[in-house]
Image 1 (cartoon, protein in one colour):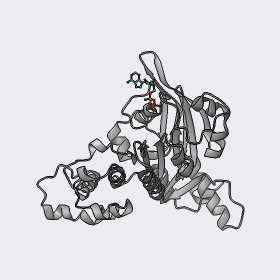
Image 2: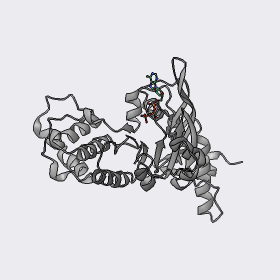
Image 3: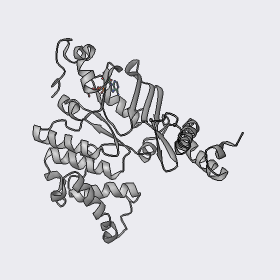
Image 4: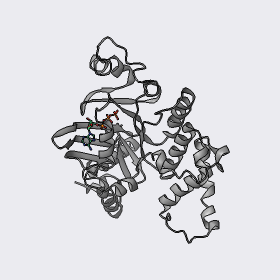
Length: 319
Ligand SMILES: Nc1ncnc2c1ncn2[C@@H]1O[C@H](COP(=O)(O)OP(=O)(O)OP(=O)(O)O)[C@@H](O)[C@H]1O
């Protein structure tokens, strides 16, 4: 039988290089690797490919449909189980909402994903790699970025300066204060790009403290984008906003979701209904239901959890 690299139409050296690169990212990757390659080869030979709709090539990397997965994720606080055996599967490129009544464990889940908290049990897998034991900074470098809290934005700097700081952080030059102002100005173009994306171009020179609440959240999204997230974690992005700001930020989330994955904790059902592809409902630390808004909102268990009655409508429950 021909060697594997030959069957896949690759030189041996390239085959080994690709395997090595991939195995850094995934312990199971080689199986996917062979599947994708075999499919491509069969298709180019006019034969039907192996089914691999869930796989995507990026350069030499094979990326599955699932960007983030938790397996039996559990967090106990002194005998109280806040998150209990949660199996979450976030699809690449989707907007995935984590919802649930107060105290359901949403924030604890987020804190586990970013490693602000250590799980008591379970696994977190990102792009096929087990990241359960990694430190927060390492997780951020992998591209899992949680939206900065407003308090993390410097209020007396301008909007542009705040975004620039995010970019410097990404470039690892945050503390290079000895660099000339001119060299730092080279970041301005990129910073202005980000401000354009979030609709804040006209506010570039405004002191952040003077921004409206909704615009501060838009700035927070720009600073998060400056970290080049592959998976953006948004923590109640429309919390405390009036209708107009809610609509603006909802549209913004939809817009910046292009080419990225978004996992958000959100209470506003109109926002969730409008932009979520998948919703996971938590209750008392466990997954109660999962699906599209249409599916979840009809689920009697979910209605009961939210309204205390299976007859109640979910729509507007927290709007
Ligand atoms: N550090 C902690 N020590 C003890 N209990 C905690 C701790 N953090 C959270 N909890 C408890 O875990 C449960 C889940 O809390 P969590 O904040 O994750 O819920 P949530 O779904 O985000 O709620 P909300 O919608 O009100 O923000 C709650 O009962 C909370 O009191």
